[in-house]
Image (cartoon, rainbow, N blue to C red; front, side, top):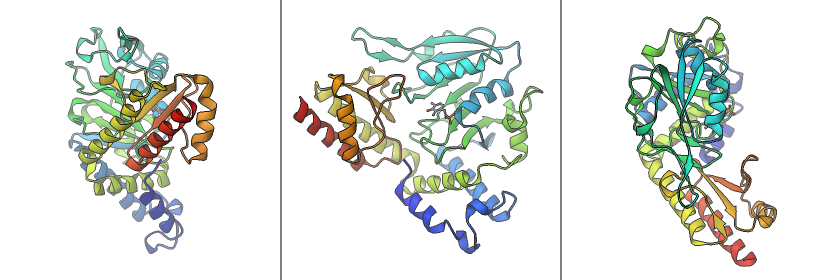
Length: 350
Ligand SMILES: *Cc1c(COP(=O)(O)O)cnc(C)c1O
């Protein structure tokens, strides 16, 4: 979901952007007008996340999965090893891809507590291997619905975080990270773009065989315009950043995100009709998976939800059940509409 105000603005500007007589989509990335859009977007995300000046912000192709390869290619050599924390679907995909490029070590994985609820590992006890080049984890597991809070890990190796599904949803101390990356389509804008925040001292060590378009240094030297970037997605991301600033920035949206998630989890916990299998301290504020106690009602639930205008609630194919993704752009009213529907559905079918 994108903020409606952003979509309305994009629509109004679609045919004739800034009296240029053409769409942003038609501007060359070498055109000064587009370069200004691009630079403004970078400045706005820098402001929003308080990105220190010794970090580059790259706007790249290839989504989150592209970064699964780009990270090892840019900051390790073939004989190196790296630590991966395994907390769900996306960190599993990340380690699988990285294993093609270096030795990977699982430095911990999710477990279940006495009640059978999912817990993410304690990063402090992160069992790092001694010769690791970097530590990788996924800050929010989109499919499994777990998220890290109070993140802290004492290590000298760069920490690499996949924040595809929770970037800009809460304040982050960027200076603790070597690399933060995010595909755009969850909290930033449309698909086709990924944002990479990389500490400058990690540049310049890409392997010779690194594809040029995935090479951080090359992209940094070329202001992410080594080849044609996804220009329209970049422009829309810029509109989303402006919108976020108008919402009071990341500090404010994180309060709203907390409210939305608390309301939805309370609705799930209050009613035996619904279950969520993540231990409370690790529940994602962005992705709320839930099951019906009677899963024979799943398809009825989804069909009636859709009739009520509540879309995209089917859980990821690997886990089934339901999942409500309540990213920044989802208003409180949207969450309340879901809760009302859930209460109603439980009453009719309970
Ligand atoms: C969606 C997602 C990805 C993959 O993004 P693509 O752009 O489809 O490659 C990676 N990591 C996380 C956490 C995601 O949510």
